[in-house]
Image (tube, rainbow, N blue to C red):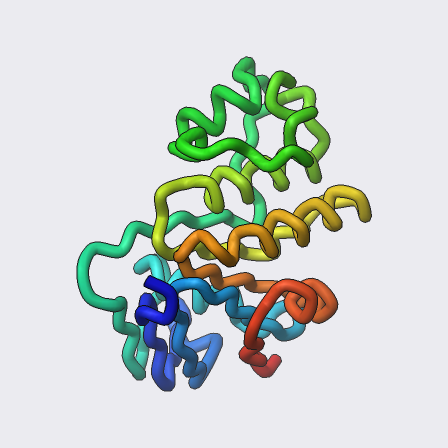
Length: 191
């Protein structure tokens, strides 16, 4: 299943009222982690929004591979209510990520309530909710937001371990060291 095309983006120009990014081109295959890198404000998140139908495509093409392709999206700032009386384990079950065991590095978060987690811990759990889901295509928008160095190291370990899952992962980040450490290829988005 590795190598099968999941997403083809060719000369994509996208935005909202007017274009904010492009042209951008890349292919993403199963078993691959692709980095979309560039400075803040360069339009990386807009590319993700175009992929999921939340930004306007002005020109170019965006094509998914054959067959149904389930997609999981980790937003740059996932919604987190001030009171969330469910545990990390319950959250993973609700998101469909409980179908496989969470990595051992996340064990300490599973029995805590979501409103007891730090911003970085919640972000890490949310990334795993996407990676542990049955999705074929995982879109991660600035996945290391709010993370301290320890949580970021865990994120990198979890991303490395996800390579064998047969899915494609698109990591958006302005942190070049993150994409260089986890991605097999990097596409630069000009600012």
